[in-house]
Image (cartoon, rainbow, N blue to C red; front, side, top):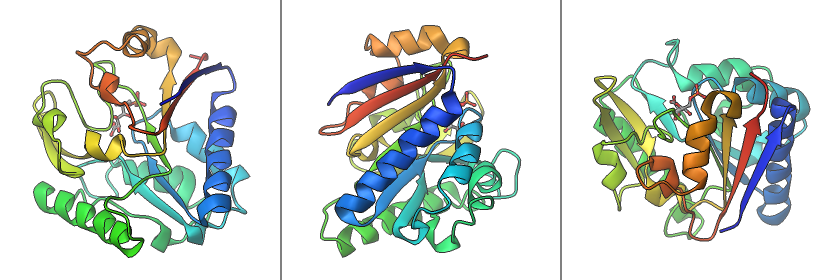
Length: 232
Ligand code: 6PG
């Protein structure tokens, strides 16, 4: 695993360029690109920028998944799918068949199982024992969470399932999330974080603070890139 930390005042442009380069590399090598989007707010300008520079990508050869989702309907303001739809899917006219939405509106364990089954089917169709993302985007919470793997939640200890429903006491709600087995199977991880807001927790993760879930993002053979915004 190699790690690169990029600090930039051109966050959206640099992050979008990084994603585009990863897409072109994967398509050149394997004729497809498997990306998992992060939720929250930080990625918004990145997705909007990507929509403007990546119109010519062969989106029909791209599989877009989500590293986590809130347990809400897709039109809910809290929905990560809604955020990605508004900033990327609609502006870039991405075909619906390229988008794998987590169904936050149904029973969480059932939604998690159906998503995992979908990934497993895609992997099986390619003779793989487990679905391998080319790129997983992750944000970073103030408490060091990634996806919806929050401190002191059961999901942190999942070693077999790739997608689970994880109850988050701090929100008193369920979330759908990738687990460390799936995340650490990726070819490339990219953290998208605002260093002006989360400088301290970033440094703790980069030092490997074991109390923080983000410190457990250690892909077996993949690389990790941090793209940090230096603008408020
Ligand atoms: C979510 C995200 C979550 C997010 C972090 C950072 O569903 O909220 O997946 O892990 O990336 O909480 O969120 P911000 O980018 O909004 O700070």
